[in-house]
Length: 137
Image (cartoon, rainbow, N blue to C red; front, side, top):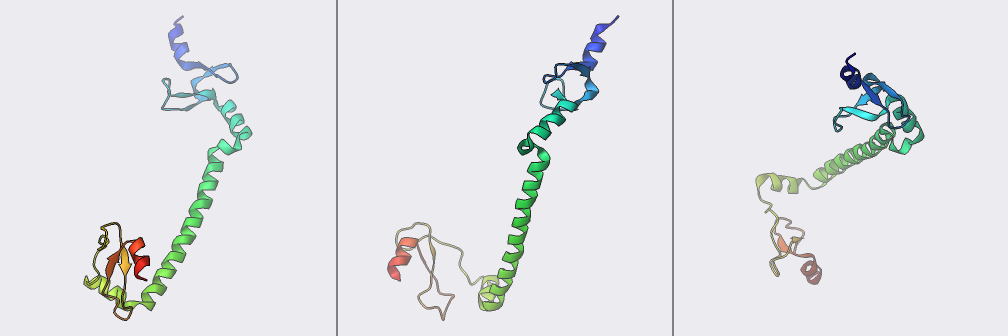
C-alpha cells in the first residue's frame, strides 16, 4: 500500500492531536502545507473562547470607528459649506490664484503661518512662525 498518498491527505491537529483529512483544516498561505495547524473545529472553539481576537469582533470595532469617521466627514463638509458662504471672497481669491502658497517665516526661516496686518484686506499676508506671530500681536 502506498502510504505517501495518505500522508499528504492527512494532517494532525496541533490542538486536539487527532489526525484528520486536509479538508478539515482551513487554508493558510503562510504555512508550508497551506493549511492551518488547528482543525476547523478547534479553530471555531478558539474563536468562541477568545472573542477579542476574533475577526468578526474586530470587524465590528472597525465599522464603529469607520462610522464615526463618516460622521466626521459629513460634519466637515457642512462646516466647509458654511465657511464658503461666509467668506466667498477668500474662495474666489484662492481659485484666481491670488492666495500665495505657504512660505517660510520671513524673520527666522522656520515653518510659518499666515499673519494679516489688516483684516479688511485679507489678501495681503505676511508669513511668520508661531513664535514671531505671537510677538507681532
